[in-house]
Length: 258
Image (cartoon, rainbow, N blue to C red; front, side, top):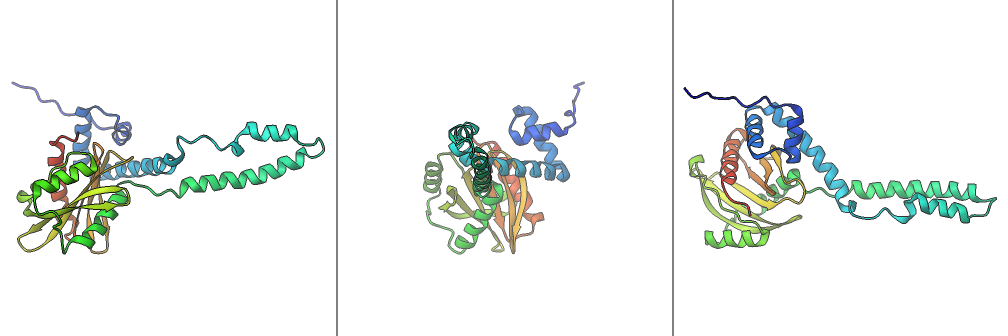
């Protein structure tokens, strides 16, 4: 008689490792299944991912830049040595005052950099839905659109089949976002209800659990996997959009991304 083993319990350290992409493929799948079954754990991971993205986005613009010369200790010490004996204390005080302001400004420069995480992707998906929902078709030929989007985002994409979820593909287009090109694919239900799927590469938040996002009458679910961000958006309540997003994610897991 075959023995069935249950996955090991998921501990907090593994939730952090999930966000950091540090789990092996088998354990990652087990943790993902755990998150799918436990909304509270998924919410915790979403917070970890948001914090990680905030830090990465804040420091990414200057991570590879050298420290400004005016902020180096060696620079301030050199100025001190070359100052007049009677005036170095005053020079140091002025430098400290200016340096503090300069350093604060430098920090503000970092803090105000825009982020490109899944929250931003969700907003881009809602904006694109609003702009194109009435005119979803730019490239009528489905294969031509897949080829165009794949070429522009430099990743192979496929249009999911959502017929089992009650939706059929009606058209799509290549759209521009604040973080590069994206594919926007529209689906209709027989009663006329429309939803859209946006797909684009993610610069930093390459792995992120599914999160519910909403604004006004539009809502949906957004996540990132293997460097691609996905956002399902529509006017339906979350209880109806969530299964559709799960189906998109299930199909995306089985498709090559390179």
